[in-house]
Image 1 (cartoon, rainbow, N blue to C red):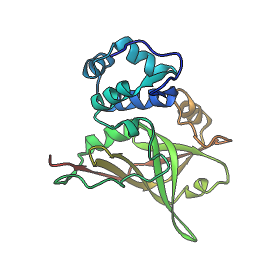
Image 2 (image 1 turned 60 degrees about the vertical axis):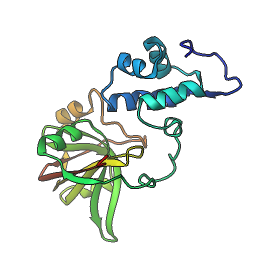
Image 3 (image 1 turned 30 degrees about the vertical axis):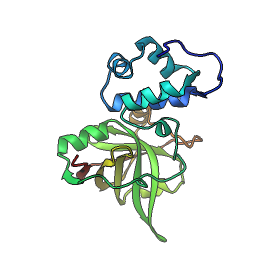
Length: 227
């Protein structure tokens, strides 16, 4: 298999772009593989894999197929197929098994940060809103706009949920936290939470109201394929 990136897309070649590189890197990390281990699986040079994960280029269908096989996914998934559709539309897992996640497993998954959903009540009824969050100490922390819908959850009982669906293996897990939302008003604490890696809002704009959800109860479930 070729180990040098092509400069231009030609016949039978597909643009990878940085999106594909990010998908490859994310899936490799999910599987706990180093670049060297991943390259060995795909029978390609580790230097080329590093190039592919970090730069825009073009790759052949053969390379995409090798990457998908090594990452235990599909070419379509690596290309971002189904991004406009909700997860879980594939077939059910073979001989599925439902198990509970231990408390340490739940905390480990929360510690990764990323996108979660806040579940709360309004006069109109229950509502769910996605947020970028961090797990700090024993609390879910996120930032929102002053006067926005989520700023109104302070003082109320809420739930917070994260999950991961593996469409290829038809497996998945979810973690649910319940607690009472609190405002973070101390300037020093706000600066500390805003330092480093976030959380940053995908929606952009002014998000200077900080909210924490101290963990009241926590639970998690996982669905595994029996095969």
